[in-house]
Image (cartoon, rainbow, N blue to C red):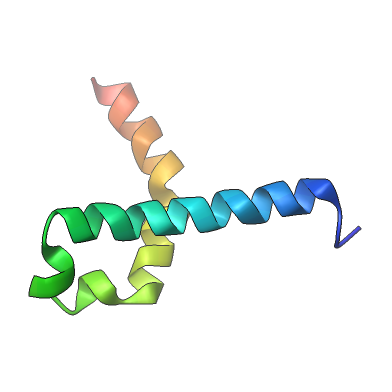
Length: 61
């Protein structure tokens, strides 16, 4: 079902991850010093890939 509570939770998580990436880029100053850090497609990529990246980093620590 397209409008289920589960889908709402997934959507909220997606938006939260996206906005957190923006926050990290802003805090580091990259948003004002580079074009790529303001690129929504790049931010989406990081937001979608962060769990995979975190998992790999966890495996090598």
